[in-house]
Image (cartoon, rainbow, N blue to C red; front, side, top):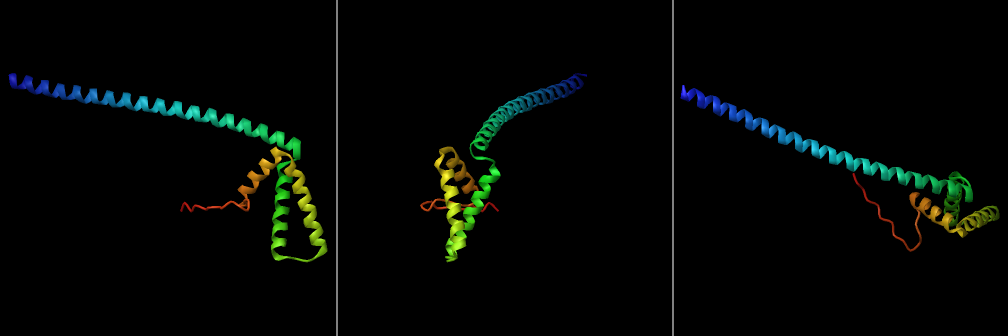
Length: 140
């Protein structure tokens, strides 16, 4: 009889230990999940704030210079100018077109905010200043 009580006690103790471990793990997982949720909530708030700032900057820029499409068009014209300059075409019509493109670019670069935006846009399209070195990182 006493050995039967010992078996029941040891079985009961094992079950209690198992349940205690299960509770501790559950509380740990719950706490970790809450912390992760709070971190993601903060990141979302930061991203929403940055999005609002970006939208404000875009609207200010569009009021000052026009649409972003216009700026991209100027950038495309600059690329055309650069490629024509590299091939050293001696056509007067092409030269006049290139001079007009340069005048438009100079006008846009006079405004500091426009200049910063154009620099950012140019860098996104693979352009750089003559004294800069571009490094490409292949992540594959």
